[in-house]
Length: 75
Image (cartoon, rainbow, N blue to C red):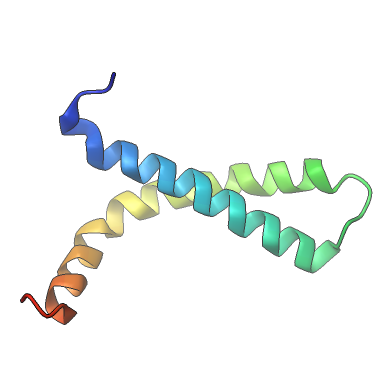
């Protein structure tokens, strides 16, 4: 098990993994369609997207929390 103090990083990892996978698949299919070799092209795009997504999510999380606090009714 991973220690509870790492929960934000674990959340960021899985969010980046899933969102980069979904978005890279959708964009790859939109741009190229179901062509031969699409799986390999998508996996390369996914890897690149994940490398960008993970540090981005970690970096912008405090900003997003602040924006949510400002627009939420409980502020």
